[in-house]
Amino acid sequence: MKKHNFSAGPCVLPQEVLKKASEAVVELDGIGLSLIEISHRSTEFVAIMESARALALELLGLEGKGYQALFLQGGASLEFLMVAYNLLENKAGYINTGTWSDKAIKEAKYFGDIIEVASSKDKNFKYIPKNYEVPGDLDYLHLTSNNTIFGTQVKALPVTDIPLVCDMSSDIFSRQIDFSMFDLIYAGAQKNMGPAGTTLVVVKEDILGKVSRQIPSMLDYQVHISKDSMFNTPSVFAVYTSMLTLQWLKDMGGISTIEEINEKKASLIYSEIDLNPLFTGFAEKEDRSAMNATFTLTDERLKETFDTMCKAAGINGINGHRSVGGYRASMYNALSLESVGVLVDIMSDLERNA
Image (cartoon, rainbow, N blue to C red; front, side, top):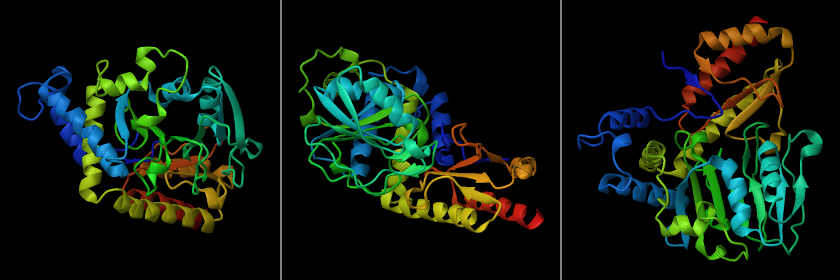
């Protein structure tokens, strides 16, 4: 039985993508060779990389607007470092909304003065800061758009002339945003786009080349752009599978279509959390993530029963992070509304039988 995969990452992927990717591991498009044994300089893989990069820009509405899409390695964790290496000359501002923001701040401090423009640490990151002032002397302002651990999501973006940088690892391609507001976006593929092993970076070229420091080649966005995202051997399987996922999203109607589905999934589970007296949500209602619903039982004596019911129904990956406890239902693009319905039915059954 195929399980209902609520894992926070690596993520659930479309079945048709998994099927085609698995076939390509045996043989890519009838060429007599596996995807993972051909040269990354071959005609076949160059076409894959070009397609993946073009699809990313197309879906984000950034074609012809001065942006480049790169598929790099090292995850968002390396981007915490690379962003500052490439953009931070004097001072940068960070909105601290959780663990990943904390980690990004730690890495950036190696390169310049970092200020926390706003933070929700005072309430264990259960809300998104608002009504903060952005200093006018920043090299850039860094946001984390969605917080997988705490289940919060930025709904309103700051209006500022300061270059905006955003870690969108867990909600990229899930909702409509004016992506041209951002000068740099990065996202680990494994949350909502593909398997672990590659990281999408979308960067506006005119913000690069302005720092005075020398940047090692492997950490220089301009070097990766000049080499068409293949300065070193890329993660061929991760790039290929991400390309398939982006094509799947385009074929279904793009971000506007998937956003409608994601809103239905989020509405279904949050309605149950709010109506069922056995559960309580962690994040503030106005800041709840459409990707990661965090909640706890109001009576921990029911934990074993609830866990057993979930396991019997084939539900996987809903244990909450230790920072929050309880449960976390990650509802990435490829998770079906049906799977969310199965979880909600179990929550309702628990109430009826308690």
